[in-house]
Amino acid sequence: MKYTYEQLAKMIDHSLLHPTMTDQELEDGCKLAVRYGVASVCIKPCAVRRAVELLQGSDVLVGTVVGFPHGNASTESKRYETELACRDGAVEIDMVINVGKALSGDWDYVQRDVKAVCDEAHQRGAKVKVIFENDYLAQGGAGLSSDDFKRRLCETCERAGADWVKTSTGYGFVKQPDGSYNYRGATEHDLALMRASCSPRVQVKAAGGVRDLDGLIMVRDLGATRCGATATAAMLDEYRRRESAEQAAQQVAASNSTIGTGGY
Image (cartoon, rainbow, N blue to C red; front, side, top):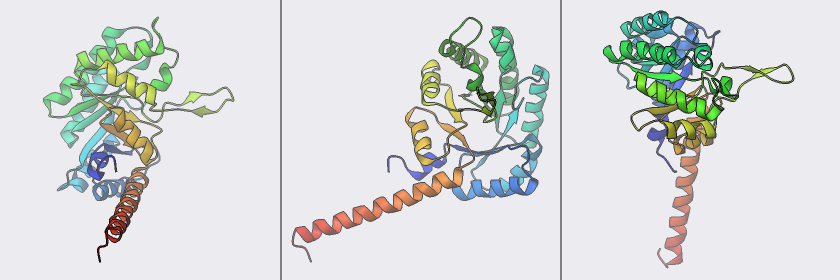
């Protein structure tokens, strides 16, 4: 296999954010995260204390969201959400930028908004992932093309102290020509662009649309270090299946080699 199980598992932020998710489902998800040895759970703010209890003694981190999913809360609300989350035990914060302010070209606001969360988190020992919601940025904005706009966001978030820049929430649905709503989430193009637009100090996280092992491997190949996922079990079970098949093939090849050289 190209990467070890641990290298891929420790990329995954197991996402437990669906609006209808019950307390039992959240608890089951935390237990699954421990069983598969992922990097973290990314959960609803109301569940942070319980997740800390469930994950005690494991190396799975507790992460939560701020200004989620649309990023439109006031800066002070985002800062206070961060304070509460950290007090409850979260050590990673996934915040959403104010997309409308960014599209308006109010870069000072965007930087202050992100910095407020980063400052609060960092002084409490937590790290911050800043979500762009790239599906909303396909046409660019503020006089910039889509790619230049995303580059500007990367630069702004790095100045504000972000530890990661992140593609999507997984809930950035855009109205399609047929009237339905859908989203693309993380794309190869955007991941490569975001990686190239930040210094090595800032990491990249993919989210939305990564549903199988090949997608997870692609994300790592493009330089991202984290991936938000709900299909954690399917991806890592597939890794074990391929690993077993590869080991069996190697054993057969080794046996045939021995026979071919006259060994008994």
